[in-house]
Image (cartoon, rainbow, N blue to C red; front, top):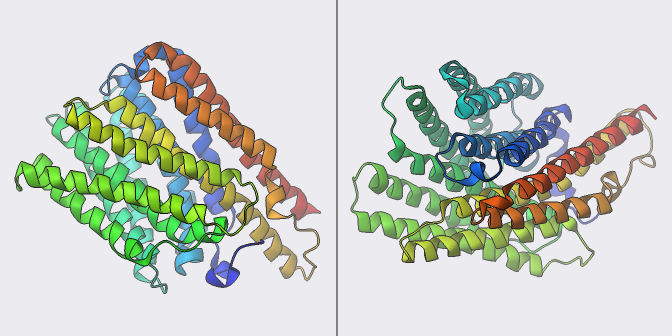
Length: 427
């Protein structure tokens, strides 16, 4: 575990390896399913943000891939980074995982035209699954011993997730016809999900994970103190103006601009600390993060240009944020977290058995570097083609093919780490 600071982690409180891995291994399956829909439907999948197949692909990537990984990661990071484990973590994960998995599958099938019964099932399953997740996470954060800025960022991201899920369930009820469809809340659902849940959580985790794993200096202290609370408050102001007309339009517009500035500041700060990293060995996870930060900066710049021209390219912004920023950052984190978990649990098992650590593989060997490197190249190629497909839909199927290859490759690499863990444990 060269280059890490074990003293900064509460390693003895880590949950069983099965807790996060069941979520991590499910995520590529949903990502691959989204890719298959892109291949099958081609340009029809990227013609309009309201098209059923577009909604299905979007939720497969945001809920199926991103949320699955993030839910699994939070259960792992709460005890290790924050010092407050999830109570009965194994049983909680066994309850949440099927609820979320079946809920996502029902939602996607319902959005794709499977009928209102599937939508009602998705509402019940996803509502229950996220309720459990929010409850246990909030309980852990309230008991947190750490005073690090990560705790505040996590707490605000969980609150943002609650708002996102509530808006999503309301919109889903509108989709069934049970209540009037309130499409004016769609942008709020996106804003709280993308900025409130994804950016705030990734920023909070990055404050500790980037310096630890990538051997960089710490983020600037003022940024860690003010960025996530500031973004949360600005999201609230923007929401009041956007949906409820409780603040003037000009204030809501200023709030949106400040949110964009804060997001861009996080991207630039991340690149700056990574440029000053102490170890210069090649690291594919660093490349994932650089791609993520470049995509996040491109989101802000594209949004600003679109606002100036009074024509926001919604599909391109979605591709840049979901595939370019969020999936790249999450993919890079997986390639650090999973080898670390395998190393940690094998180390613990050998210590319990009173054995030396000679048989524990080096973290860098758990997932071979070439396998990660080639998957990164395929994922980057898929991003480029998807960006082009947002303008020229004829490229959607080839983009989907590359995304499918990337997701299958990611899943194979993660399964390889699990196989190595089991093989070494038996030995």
